[in-house]
Image 1: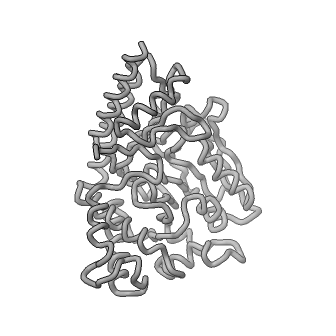
Image 2: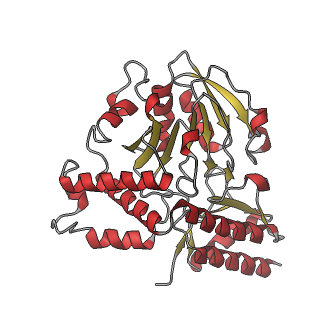
Length: 360
């Protein structure tokens, strides 16, 4: 079988070495004669897996003891509710910045639980940029400011983060978590669904400042309380153990590959190549303003939309799969997460150039 390059936006590609390791250990982990998915989450063997995963994540993020690291089942969408339930009461006000589909979903969920001020939005410009911080209308008494650091669907990314002063900055980093170094101390809380850069779907990583835990509203269910998850080291109930194990393998891979500095260099090189191919073309178009383009998710359209199906059909025949844009916007989307090799981007560009020649 010829090599397949998977540009899926999530669940997404995992590093080949991680997949091979998981395959090797699938039926016999550490000489136990059973799989990781068959052992107790309270066993010594799994506790070692969990502790190593947290230690590797802390090392990658240069994370100090002021933060908890939580491995929570469910995806980022569950955090859309957990964040306001834990950080705000029903009469409080929280600030949200609207930069696309996922921040809109977070806003919709938060409105069920507290008062939401949309401090800035680029909706009227078809979400083609991140609103400049000087234009944000923040609430002085806000319990937190929420951003989506990278819009997976629209391909808009924060390349600089705002200073929100004493108001905690909360970020949904699902699709660019661990793709570059960040100054964690600037955030009160970061959450990220695992299925982009960390592992398979079903696990969410939450990095939360310790002083923000224990502020949940009365009657918050135990499984939706950061305090409870922290007190029980993410094992209040049975966690998704195999997802946690795979995330640990990915975190170990990231360390061996040179950490987040190395990932940022690779990811920028991949994205710059692809955007250059789009910009020099007479057929392809990027809908995002250049300073705000995502390094992780590159959406583009064909100036002749009727050619898109043919473009995707030929791409698939060449081993370039999962390039169809999100159902809500259409077009083409190439997701360039950490595990995507530069070879994949080169193959995509070759297809794009070849396809354009055949249509001219």
